[in-house]
Every structure is written in structure tokens, then in C-alpha cells.
Image 1 (cartoon, helix red, strand yellow):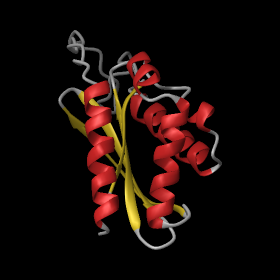
Image 2: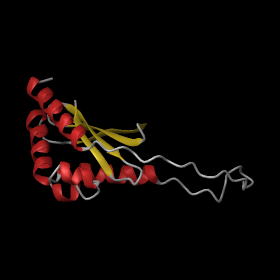
Image 3: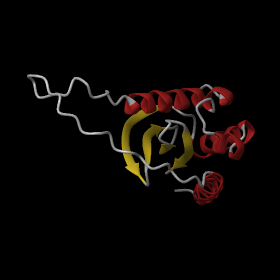
Image 4: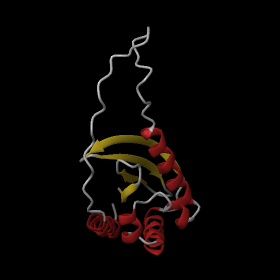
Length: 151
């Protein structure tokens, strides 16, 4: 990996970690219920669509970055991200990634994990000369609280 790209990733990570130092709110577990249908499912339990919402937002961010629509890429940011990563800084970061790796091509794969109370979606992307990961962290309200470009 090019040293300049490593330095960029380190600098961007430091910027985002310091600007996104937000403690997640504790999650209160749902009260247990005994209603179960004949298939063993609980028809009264709310469907967890958070993953679908987060994946949709992550896809929109990736698509908007590829179209250089930085304002729309920021529309689901939490306030701390809006303050910490203005449109111009996001544009500069995206342009630096493409300068180092080549033009964005496509998403290769997507994974989701939970860490420190946040949901994280990782989109492995193909650029002109190399692959990189766009990592997007979400709070419990499905707002973006972290955006990283990783090797």
C-alpha cells in the first residue's frame, strides 16, 4: 500500500474518531412475551428492520459519493458528523481516496457487525487500481456516527 494512502487513512481516522466521540445510548431489552403462533414465531414482536434501513443508507452514501453528491451523502449523518465532517472535508477525503486508488467502480461485498453498541456496515469496493473498504458506523437511531475509508 502506498505510504501516502496509509498516512491519509491514519489522518482521516484520527479526524473522524475525535469528531465522532459519542457514547451510544444503552439499549433497553424488550419485555418478554408469550404470544407464539403455530409456526413458533411471535406475531406481536416488532420486526427488526434496522439492518435493512442501515443497508439502504449505506448504499445511498456509497452511491452519492460515486456521483460526487456530497450533500446527499451527508443527509443521514448524526449532528456530530454534520459538525465534524463538513461537505468540503468529505469531498476532499473522497477525492484523495480516488487519487490514490483510482476511480470508484463498484461494491464487491457488504458485511455488518456490532461493536461498542454501534452497528457497522463495511462495503468492500473496487477502485481503479486497488480495493478499499468504506466503513459506516450507525447509532441506535440509525444515524451515521462514523465514516471511514480503509485499505
